[in-house]
Image (tube, rainbow, N blue to C red; front, top):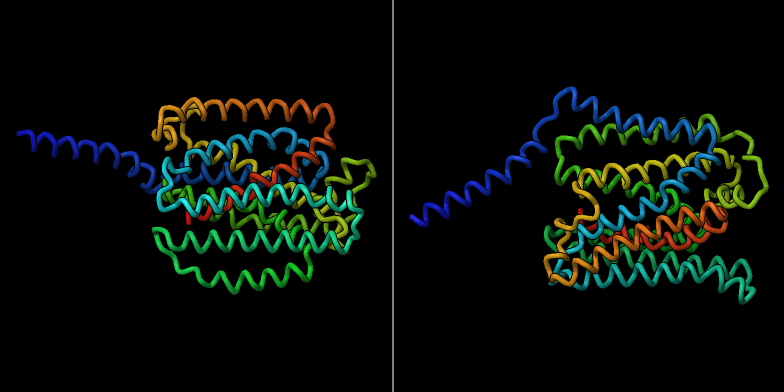
Length: 353
């Protein structure tokens, strides 16, 4: 009798768990398909138009409004993906977390060391190339460690590719570094694709068709702005924005296009982390921790994580206040510290592959 009750209980639980998964993976109706595609395309086209029309002001507005909140939501997402106990993943996460902090500290220290020691431009470029080499080695190590975990992957080919990237980096270190500025926003699109594959697979084909239009948006910006005059303005903020987008690195290309392209990609990046990922992955009020594995490890972790979330929210408010007080200085500090979240995405993206 008890055996029958246990079997019925397991069957009931299985049905309860399978129903929502089946609903998420079932084919979309035509209305749902058009609605989802419409939202994706609306964000994409609006971002492209605003970035091309007024790139400087759009860059200022997006960084002010979304830089802090998107980091907060990204940290909240990472909490849901961090195992409560690392077990066989210990080496992977130690390598990942250690590399994030060491590389961020080194990246922040390089400009100050060059200025303090009055080193030449060639020495500065050598330091940049060395940092890029460490970054490539760190990512390669993570890829190889990930390939040995379930599901196992045959990724040994990354070793010769990494060697080729190191060689390219030493030939043109500043260009390689700037390429990371443009590649980083695309990581958010990749995160969203993997999340859709995991829990909303019926939406993935529609999403991929929408993402396939990103190169066409960039091509439209190039067609209209590549030969346009450089953006006017010699104030500190304008110089920060244009230099961050690649002024002086890509010779013969208008800063109007560079800033527009970078701001367009950044807006897509913010949209994924602030809207799409929270709705698809967290699926609850962000300060509720029921889906955070660390809270199940020990009762001590719940107040620690709640305190961390509260501190993150306080930092967002402080960042907004600092932007209002001195936007150029705050922007410079933010993009120096933001390397931390850029690097932190790598281990968790690899875990989804």
